[in-house]
Length: 113
Length: 117
Image 1 (cartoon, each protein chain N blue to C red):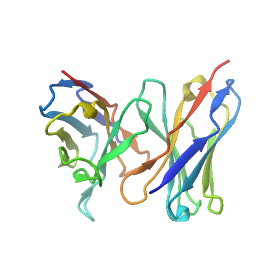
Image 2 (image 1 turned 90 degrees about the vertical axis):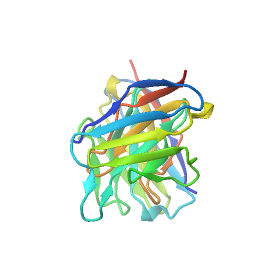
Image 3 (image 1 turned 30 degrees about the vertical axis):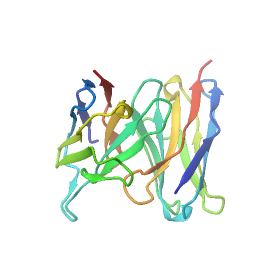
């Protein structure tokens, strides 16, 4: 199984500042045949289902504000929120959808400092 | 825009069974694989099961293998999760999800299953 490890577990950032969340996979989630990384980022607010933010490691889902960005490849990935807004308070999860069992990181709780 | 609505959750005793359903609208249901994901109270997300677009392929997490079964009805646009031999560890919100275009872009609101004596 591919183990996804996020850091930190929680993060407090001031409004307008940058937030950075790391996600590492225990093996590569890249597919050399199509040069894609099967890595997604989700945002989950209390009482709501997860919402897809980023797929293919760096492609923003339609409607997601451009302050959200994804980067990385292979086994190391990063979610960056360039200028934190109050509505970004949530738990963020990375997920590999390369191989079964599909696995998620443990989550990173993002709060306002 | 896909709409997924789960139902069937509730309180059940350990060792008993429960069947969850997910009704899907807004997409050509028979074209898409479907997934069940669960989230224990205060915990993270755990993939539980998948079923291929035509129902021919199913896969399960080790934690539920042999106890849970997934099926779909491409005429009624529903996917079901039959959960047997439930334990306290199965207590969670169960979400159905699908990938209409990329990753898992559509999720239901979830249904809560509580396994308790």
